[in-house]
Length: 537
Image (cartoon, rainbow, N blue to C red; front, side, top):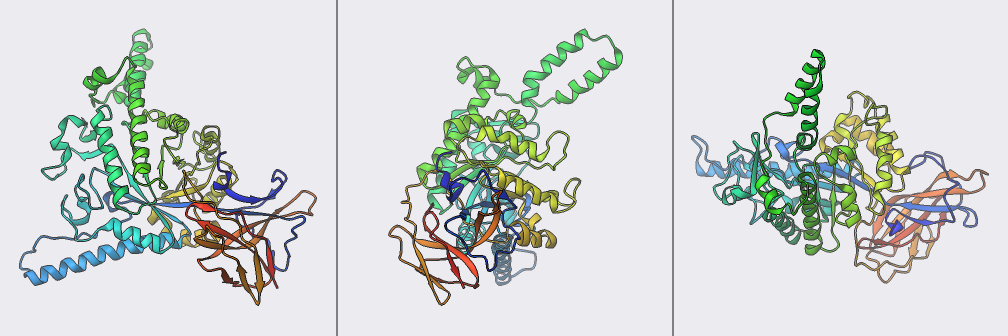
């Protein structure tokens, strides 16, 4: 893999003989001194994300709206005070949900900023989201994204903007008069009772570039992110499978088989029409319809990736497709192509099934992504919302999924759906004690113009760890070491670090004695290899 330091900074000969436990071993390493002649150190950095969902106010703003209209019998002064209270309540709720995400041990917030072509930020392209005030286009009186970024960064977290690029929303929704779907009706396709941007229209691809470029240029986001809404589910079956089923119907003679097949055909042929024939005729360039639709999605992904890096070279762009490749391909999405073309910086497949699932066993699905990923990091989506459902009756299922994710060399972390699912008391306690008992830095993803800092050499006096500053370093991360496993002969111990603090200074007071410590120098995305190990008596 390119830039192996993205996954882990390693000082080692080889790890093939490691007998490994889970990410943070519960073995007691107290009073054991690291032996530099035999022992090995591994300091891992892990992407720990949570999807902060705003569609229908799922995680935020829930049912808190800033009602700007004057109420019956309300004086202007009373109206002003009420609006201020509602606004403050909405803002506190946003700060609270991000703070609680931090408490779970996560280090990345992925905030849904645009679901149905509405925005949770100031935009010249999109209207304000109606969930903020109850009315699309009404300014809530503050900038939610600005507040979210300030909050996340103050807590030492990254924050990425999450977009559903193709959705315009329900046909019956109230929209501002100058909405782009009215100004450019030729860019829209109505499918059933829902409107979508037409990927076959090149102007839509430019529009999506502009949306991403605008927000990445105007806000200090660490990245942009889209999920699995591409072409609509069922379109590929209508195009490729339905004609074959109708042909099969002609040759059947058994009445029961005919009835069953007709039932299947009627269910598939639901009367909804994705009418892109004119655009295919104009831009198809001799391709088959299905191949042309795939190419349209490829162009959208490439355009959004370019917008991110044009606006902010060090930021990253990721896609979260369906958990199984076959399901994603049914939507005319081709992650293998994006990986090969370099149009994504990471892939986050939504593997929302349990071990033992007949069709989508978690481990089998996770393993299926390995040969595909090549040099692009995989960050699987985790189904926190399914806790207490069949297959997820206990937290043991999540712990097993985490262990298997951490064992896979192409996996760089996980993302949890949805944020409020993590906040249930027993779930939160397990997250803090078992899954993320120590904080973690985010691994390097995508490209970087930052200089890799030189490793430091540390010394200790009276419990204070000190080092000479590394010229390129902006800050330093201090790790306490734990034994994670032993070689088969039992003589070599493998240690990994638990992050205990960060500082911009060149010293750090160790919180505990009789422990081994290392320090990593940090410059933006880049991190040095670990320092020498010291044991504080």
